[in-house]
Length: 152
Image (cartoon, rainbow, N blue to C red; front, side, top):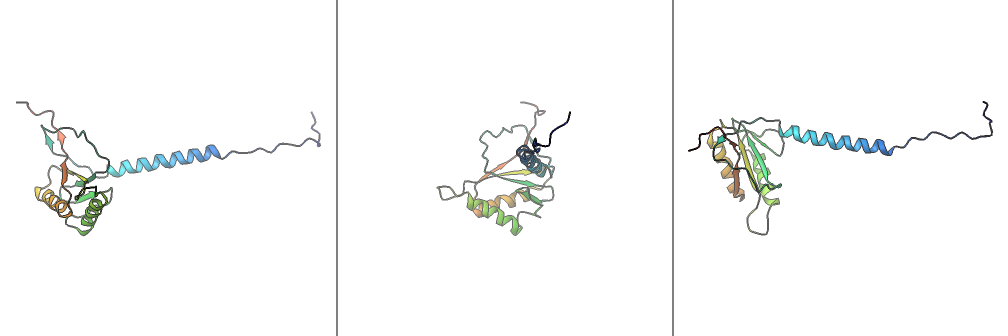
């Protein structure tokens, strides 16, 4: 069958819309995976407590502070800060407290301390004093529930 030259051939077109959708979905996926992997960057063995209760009033604007055995601080998914006395950590804590000023006179930021079970207590004490210095009064210690403990 012969085609006459008088018939115009249609040009093939390619729609970029599905390709752009897929690219955006991949970007969202990789950003999410990256954030989760940053949170798992430092492994902590939390202390166990037989009376630990699950946190039912989870606030999304709380500041999570991870402390390793040697007192190194990991905050805001960043790199290690040598200790809570470091000026970099003091600036982060002061900025977080300032940003969370509510209608009251004191910041309503909640600080969650996740400390390794073998960490000396004086590191936690330094964190408590640093929070007090900037006016953060809500401090919680995170533990793992010890279900194996004998019930009295």
